[in-house]
Image 1 (cartoon, rainbow, N blue to C red):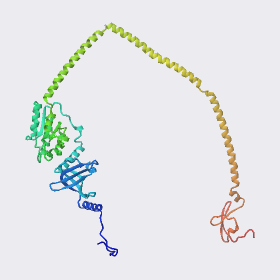
Image 2 (tube, rainbow, N blue to C red):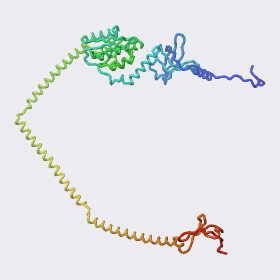
Image 3 (cartoon, one colour):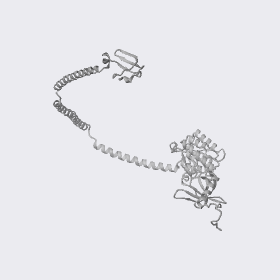
Image 4 (tube, rainbow, N blue to C red):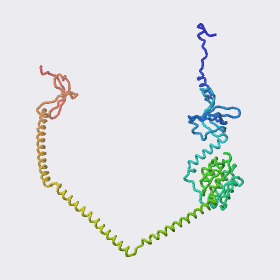
Length: 453
């Protein structure tokens, strides 16, 4: 039943919210209730939009939630997630108002299960990189002929067997020194650093290989320790890092002089195969024989040419004498020609200077005449100015009030110093000041008489 005009005016219906307003209020409520939190799950339905934003679903065995990571945050992510990746995200719980869908806005993303290790890896990498430990300028080249190769790894590691097999196959003549150290465990990093330091101190190998097989980031953590990186950087001989598989990167890889994708690749880089050297020497020997043959052939032909051009000593002396006479004639001509040319030029300049030289005697006479006229003109002007000054002084003397006072006149002023001109300005008992020619006096007025009376 709808209310009529006679209904109670105090009655008011509850406010009606729009869908947009409702979603906005719910979004604000969620954002205030849930602060930024870390959430772990599996990536699903990952999409990278043309705008650079990432859209995906984060799920676990029992539930899922929509997620968005905007371009401003996604561009700082250390990796691009793929379908099925286990990740941890730092996100804000909110609501997408246009659809009314509950979602999370991702601020940061990292791989799941290795977050702490990966963050420690990145912090150490940035620290050592800032110190210049990874600079290419400090990387040392490998020796061309390595006679002794050192290996730092575990005696029980499969990587050791791979390295030994590769070295025996390629360079059976090379001596191998093993510096045993555990490659996994609580004290593995310290033992690896000590083994590298021992090899550096003994200096008994030409190149050192630090290696182990592949594994997870937890398995490779010994090679991500600062002690190992600094031991590699301080080693006295070049170091090859062969840790893990081709896709594995450790701090030791960055600190080493050369990184190998695998332990076997490290062995191949440490020493060139003997067969390759033998083939290279044979090719060089063939090139040397051919070069010597060309040199001898060219020298023989040159000797024949020189023997045909050889002249008797007397002919050579006569040829040199004629050449010397020609050079002497050329030298004489070269010396005399500039002297004659400059002498003619000097005579022409003297004639031009004589034509343009000023007549100093006429200028001197004219200057003396101008000086006399100037002295006379200045003297006349000074006399005229002096006479005019005397006339003005006489006129000024006539107007001097002191002269008027000397003729018997006086200047009368009141107590305030005002000069009086008429009797009306004076009252009885006023004190007046009278200035005379030779001083002044103060008088009291007994009475005032007007001139008209």
